[in-house]
Length: 128
Ligand SMILES: [Zn+2]
Ligand SMILES: [Zn+2]
Ligand SMILES: [Zn+2]
Figure 1 (cartoon, rainbow, N blue to C red):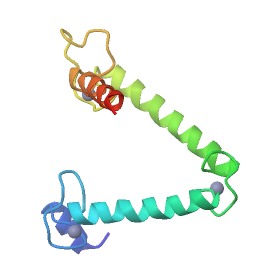
Figure 2 (figure 1 turned 90 degrees about the horizontal axis):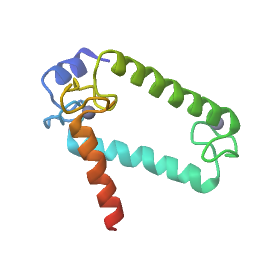
Figure 3 (figure 1 turned 90 degrees about the vertical axis):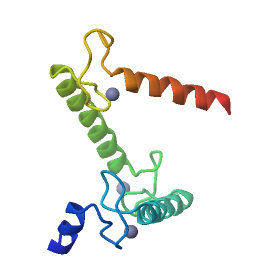
């Protein structure tokens, strides 16, 4: 990370251009979608060719070779377990980390906002 990039992050300016960066990101909307596109395209290409998206081995397990599939599975599992344990202990939403409200969130692991969001996205996917 160059001092120049740090300055941009501090001032909430995209590190690739001088447009304002999106909230919580180091790139502006344009560069963010460009980055996403690029990584998506290279992933799509590998998926289409039947190549592991983490290396150049043949993808024998979903989008991964066996080695990377196991790594992916394990890291995902560990990440979610650790995260939900920490959040639960501190009385926070396991999804976004917001403090839980003992009145409305009693017995729930996620806050009211996240619970609502889940229902909305459920509804949206059913709506198609
Ligand atoms: Zn930019
Ligand atoms: Zn691999
Ligand atoms: Zn939440």
